[in-house]
Structure formats: C-alpha cells, structure tokens
Image 1 (cartoon, one colour):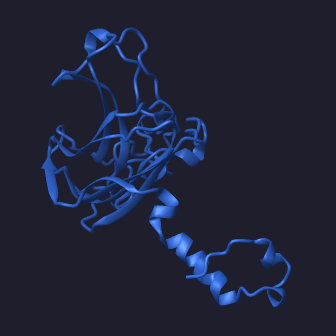
Image 2 (cartoon, one colour):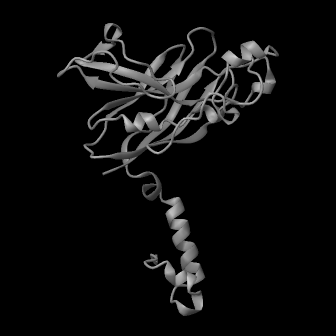
Image 3 (cartoon, helix red, strand yellow):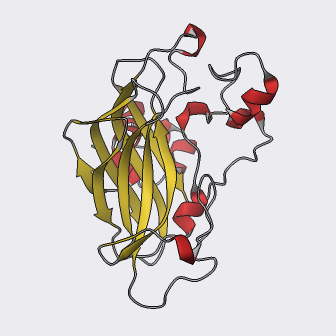
Length: 247
C-alpha cells in the first residue's frame, strides 16, 4: 500500500507526480474500509448470542480507558427484535417498537456524595435526584440512554453503527428530520396521540453531550431490553463492538 504523504502532488497533476490514479484509489479505499482509522480501536466487545423476553439483560460491561479528552464512542451492533403488529405499514420501521438497547452510566459511590445536579445529558438522560439513586456494588447509576431500537416485526439480523461524537448536538424536538414520518401503530390517525408516540429516525439519536460529560474510568453497561407491558417482545443481540477515539 502506498500512503500519500503530500496531497499537493495530486493537485499539481498526476503527470508531475509518481503517484498513480490506482494508488490514490487504493489509499481512499483503505481509509474508508479500515474501522480503526474511522472509529478508533476496539475497547470492549461481546460476540455471543443473547436473548431477553419481557425483561432486561446486561450484554456488555466495560470501563473507559484513562484519557485527557475523548472524541467519540462508536457502537457496532448486530441485533434484532420481533413482535407481530396489526398495522403492516409500521413493519420494518422503528415506530411502535419496544425492543431496544440502552447504555447505562455508572460511577463509584466513594468520594463526594452526588448531590443536586450531578449530571444532565441530552436525549433521554435525567437530572439526578440523590434520594432516588440506584446503588449496587458500591456504585450508583447516573442514568440510562437509548442506544438503538430494533425494527418492528422483522426477524432478520440488522447491522447498526452508532457513533456519539463530542462535536454533535441532538436536534431540537421541533425539527421534523429527527422523527420517523407518519403515525405509529398506537397513534393511529390521531395526531395528538402520535405526538406522544414519536420515534427517533433510524432508531437512535446523536448524543454528543453524553461524550462531553464522560470521565476516565466511567463504567458503561450495554443493556438489552424488551417491553414488559405486552406479550411477544424480544430483544436478541449477536454482536457489540465498542470503539473509541481519545487522547
């Protein structure tokens, strides 16, 4: 592989350079297909089949490496969820689906006790109430955030690449591009119900604020979840690689 050291040579014309068009194309392909270059190295991984029905299950737990700054977290997933739905128009979408994965953030209870507003993150995070802390094994859960929903009434495995980048900001709720189009099964043709049943387009949302608020050594847990309210919901995961870029 020939690595391009001086891109100015390209703009001077290939006839003046020893670099060939084929070498340029090969370098572009190498950059675009090497996930280490794009998303950083793998810092945690699980590639075993796990299933949960009407409950939740931990799929992967890991600690962030020591860092000065962290730029992004990328979750590479293979998963699926299944439940029949009477409204076939929603099949294959993320509307009305209650099979999904979350990310939980945990920190040690040692040191100063969290009081008041410990952390406030975008998306489905929440302001910490010290009186309602979830504590376990000398740790407390800061919060939980949507990672990826499964498609409705689909039995095929899906591959997802979800990147939370420090420079990204979640879209305002008023921006139509944030939501799946149309009504969900539950919303039917009632606009007022549909407003309360909005679903993220693509089944996930950018979460740069989460990355900006992370601390070295934070514990993250990838949680599989399936609705406990209605029968038939299942969440299956076959793979989760976590990649990170940090200094």
